[in-house]
Length: 175
Image (cartoon, helix red, strand yellow):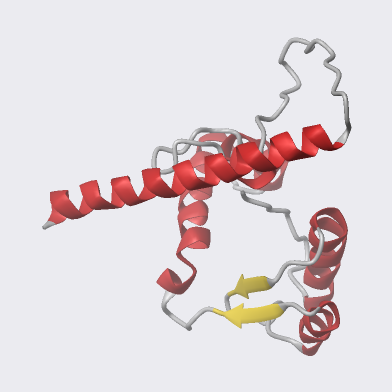
């Protein structure tokens, strides 16, 4: 599941604000944050925040982007998609960022067989253009959460199996 936001200044303060307001206060405190060694990540302010919330901050190896491969893969996808929409001056990319993130998070990924949204939240997303769903009733409220947890567990296991299968196919192709 990808979270991305445009940062007008790319400073330590702006990065800390985004981490706090748009990640921690929305999704809760992460166990681990992996970043590159940019000065907007590698600073006392972010170190204080991660220490305060009990989060481990891991830095990728300099000049070795493969250390944070998932982010680099996202960046590659993002740049490709963004190039289709940006104007010639490339100064309006932030306008398209939310739509590209939405499309990425709600597209089935070949390797896992699921959308990142399904794997993160344990259910299919309700899109703005979907027809209204009928109301359903559960005898006990905890049944809904049990159902979500069960679905997410099954989806994560299936995604892991699908990824392993895709890795084996790739290995056979390249060996």
